[in-house]
Structures are given as structure tokens and as C-alpha cells.
Amino acid sequence: MITYKFRFYPTTAQENVLVDTLETCRRLYNAMLADRIENRTGFYEQKKTLTQVRKQCKHLQAVHSQVLQDVVLRLDKAYQAFFAGLARHPRFKRRTKYNSFTYPQTGFKMKDNRLRLSKIGQMKVTVHRSVVGVIKRVTLIKDINQWFVAILTDGEANRIEARKGQIGVDFGVTNFVALSDGTTTESPRFMKRSAGPLRMFQRALSRKRSGSKNREKARIALAKAYRKVRRQREDFAHKLSDRLTKENRLIVFEDLKVGNMAKNNSLASAIMDASWGQLRRMTAYKAERRGGRVISVDPNGTSQKCSRCGAVVRKELSLRTHACPRCGLTIDRDVNAAQNILKAGLEQARVEESPLLVQRRRISKFAPMKREARDLSHG
Image 1 (cartoon, rainbow, N blue to C red):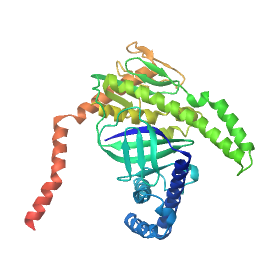
Image 2 (image 1 turned 60 degrees about the vertical axis):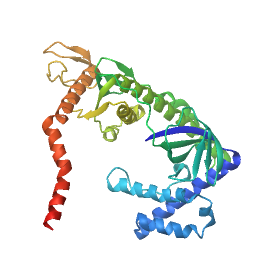
Image 3 (image 1 turned 90 degrees about the horizontal axis):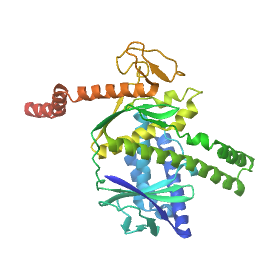
Image 4 (image 1 turned 180 degrees about the horizontal axis):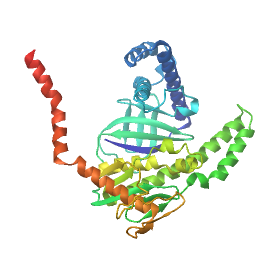
């Protein structure tokens, strides 16, 4: 499976329909959420209810049936993430917080650079790379004043085999990353660079009267400024992850708890501006496509231990150079940590690939089937 994201250009009439569809989906999401809270209904009950209600409501009939069913599925996924401890309890969505809807199976057709959607019409799409495979799902996304389509297909991405390199990656604030080969990448600090314009747009928004047209214009201007920062981060992370996965078959990250680290008031803004989690996610899926592997290891002690002799060299955060009194190694503190991270990753990979562990995995994989067969034979 692979997802392609393209920008498309609806007409004024089509954009009105797209906005109305978004609003209908948002209201349905909020109504279903209220129903779950008040009546404790489940996913299948809500799907049946929606089928009955849609026959009576004209505004629901204006939206493709599967788009509405996907809204119920989206709410159910939000609850599953909540019960798994991966997210907060689902909340009611404001207008600006619900910005996409999906055609999960049918209702779409794409030919060349034209996309036809049921209930909306045909639109021009900027196809900047060829779409491989059969289209399985289409998602329409509104990004402030721009529209994008995410197309999921059953095709495979062009595989670029990664080289046989191995690298350890240490995250930092001054240096965005330090690599075990001695390379460092300075933190771009996009949010800090844009702090001036953002403050200006924020002040302009605070001075506008609530509910006025000028306030809406100021809100959009501020949102565009934040969008620029977001896209700069994404572009930086895409390029760095692409380089890491092309040059290395094994990439080892430190398993940082970014949420806990952000509680440090003096470092919170710099940590959130760095977007470490985004780089890890992008590197993971690109490495998988290229036949590589990403490992996360415990970061405890990686900065204090000497990467050459293993001696513990205590140093404050302000001290940026590692100087070992035992073996005489003197290198950048973050590079030393990256080398320790790589060693820990290689050791973890060796343990996971040991013959005994592989044999245990095979036994545990088939054990439930054997128990089931034994139970049936005794029955």
C-alpha cells in the first residue's frame, strides 16, 4: 500500500459543496459522540441508526453514504485509541478542527489528472508523479485555503535499496541530530525564526472584534504563518530521513519520551520546535520500504559513558565536549552519545536475531494452533 498526496483545484461551486460536506460530517461526528456519551451506544448500533436517519434527512442525502459511514468509523477509531491509552477521550470538533472526509471504497474515479467524486463532480488534480496500483481509498483535506487529495493504492513504491551502513542518531537542541560517524546537523529552529511575524499576526487577531470579517481575515493570516512553519519542518524531516535511509540499512534512535521532556519549562519550546518524533516516524517507514531497519534503545547513560572504553564520565548539560580521563578520547558530547546509541542498537539487534530467540518466536506462533487442535481432538 502507498499513499499519494496531490493538490487539486475545485471551482467556486465545488468548493461550496466540499465545505458543506465537511460541515455535515463534523456535525454528524459530534452527534454520534454525544450519543455514545449519553446512551453508551456502540459502533454497529450507530451504523444502523445512521442508515435509518439518512433516509429522512435531506442534508445527509447530499453526502455520499460511505463518506458518512466513515465518520462513524473515525469516531470508533478515536475511542479505540483512547481505550488503548494512546490518546485522550474523543472531544467535540469545532469548525477549524475537522478538515477532512473520506471515500473508503466507492464514489470516486481518477483518470489522468482528473478526479471525479460522487455528489461533487470532476476536478483538476496536480499529479506530480505517476500513481501505481488500484485506488482503494480517497481522502479530501482542507488546509486553510488549499485543498489536497490523499490517494491510497495497493501498489508498491519504487524500492531503492539502502546501502549497508549503520548509524546511531542522538537528538539535541543545539544540534538537531548528531550521528555516530561524527556528522552533526544544526537545528533549523523554524518556530524561533518566525516568532516575530507570528507575534505580529497574533496581536492583530487579538485587536479584532469577535465575529467580525476582519477577525476572520486575521485568523486566516495567522493560520497561514503557522502553516509555513509546519511545512518547513516537514520538508526538513523528509530530506534528512531520506538521506539516512538511503545511506544506512540500520538506523538506531534513542527512545526519548518527548512528552515528559517537554514539561521542562526552559527547554519545552526548543524541544517541540525540533520535531524529533516526526523524523523518527518518517525514517521508520522509509527504511521499511528500502529494506532497512530502525531500532529504538534506552537513552539512559548514553551521554555519560565513554564510547571507546566504557568509563562513566560525569558532566553537566552545559559541557559540550566529552573528554575521557581513562583513554584520552576527546570528541563532541553528542557524537559520543550517538556512538553509544549505535553500540546499544547493534547489541539489541544481535539478541533479537539469535537462533534461540527466533526458535522461541516460531514455537509461540504455532502454539495456539496446537492447543486448539488438541482441544478439538479431546472434544
